[in-house]
Length: 515
Image (cartoon, rainbow, N blue to C red; front, side, top):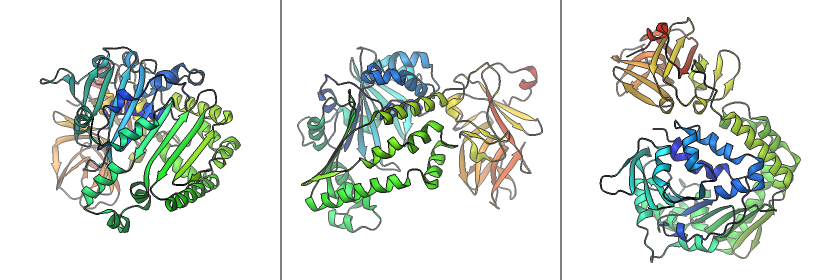
């Protein structure tokens, strides 16, 4: 099941970075109880207050949240009944650092709803296949997986739900209340009426780093394999906080507490130097290339307008950090022209993310001779076209892979499966666009066509063998770039089209359905 569901609540946090909220009348006690001594950071935001604010209404904040929900393979109308910004009082992300494996951290979410007794319905709205644990009626399991861990949800009380990978959820549920807890103490000190608040402490992350590496602080500072910025965050900074207080006069507040005054001097110079560099670099061709890579296509005009505006440049120039002993501070009002441009950008991006209107017919998701454009926003002519998978209609039933000569094969498909690899019977689908053996893998395969023959094209590569089919793959035992296949046979470079359909197949289309 798509990780978009898990990411939804976290994405809301980042979606509101430029959106104002009015003051809060709550304290942080309900969240502090779930902060484990191992955790190193919190991110707090209040969606319901954003939705009620004048600026939230101006930028149609509920529409932005709905656009995020529509990227998941769920009923958006039902999900908005529980996850709309007017339904969620507060979202808090708790960061569990260096948990092992190939991830830097695991996130836990504390979701506080306006209305009591909505937790089960809210979880089922995003994860309809989740189920209640046989050993705990307050625990929902099998929501999804993240970094190899099962994601679970726990109904902490009638208004509060915890969502996290199993190990992090266990820490949240059993956080010691009397133990020394640097993050909880800092969180309680920092908590105020800000619309957005980020708190970080270095102690837990440093402790976990030393446990994993076996290095003490001196050895870690001398370690050439550790990034210098990471060393600063672990060894030189005690804590930092970021607050976005956007009442009538939106303001950014940033504070760093260093271990030594000399470190504060150096870090202040580095931060201010970085601001000056950013002013010079923000509109260079190199920065445009980076943004184009992030968007997968040309940068939306509203975004470039924001970046290139004199108001944004003046705002960046005003970001001057000041040192006071061991502390570094910044407090700056966000000018109205920047907020106006940011709201315009957010609306354009939300509009671009909406699913394509669905009339039950075929919707083209990709057409190219190169799989690198799969799941991007590309429109460089009829044979170099793609749209993000998130924009596929929510109720698709079929996927069609079409050769430029008009022949095609069709398989059953759901939106959540588009970007995955899976098998149904003798046939399988590779939507991951795996880049291996000097070629990307995208297409349909037939499990009967498993071999290790030189010159064949494997749509799905396995250990010491692979499976042939229709689409893109690697050139077996030659690995000389991207190759194409049709019906299990190697073919010259050709244009493939991938479409999806929610309606019923015609009699002719049923002849191409693989079962």
